[in-house]
Image: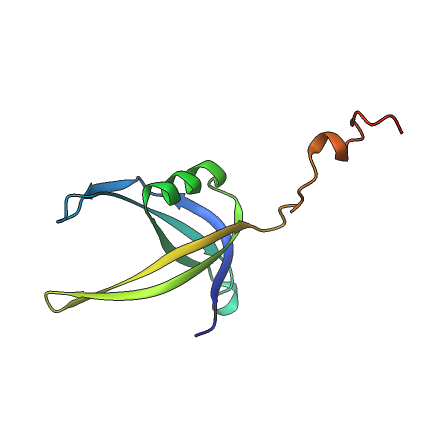
Length: 117
C-alpha cells in the first residue's frame, strides 16, 4: 500500500481520553481534526486522526496548535465489535507545512556567533 498523507489545517483538538486496559496498563489517546478544501468543487473535507500513547499525545500538544497547517501521515485500521465495524485513522507523523527545517542554531543564522573571524 502506498503511503497515505493529508494536508490541511488543524481545526480542533479533542480532549485527551485515558483508561486502563484489561492487562492493567494505563493508556492515553487524543483525536484531532484536520480540514482542507480539496473536496469536490473545493468543498471542505474533514479528517479525524488519533494518536495513541502518552508520549505521542504529549508531542501532539507540545508542537501543534489549532490553526497550524500540517501534513499528516497515517494508517487506516478497522475493528469489529459485536457485529459493528469501526474505522480509525492513526497518525504516525505530523509535520508542519512550510516549517523551516534547519539544524543551524538561531544565533548563528542571525550572525551572533562567538567566532573571531
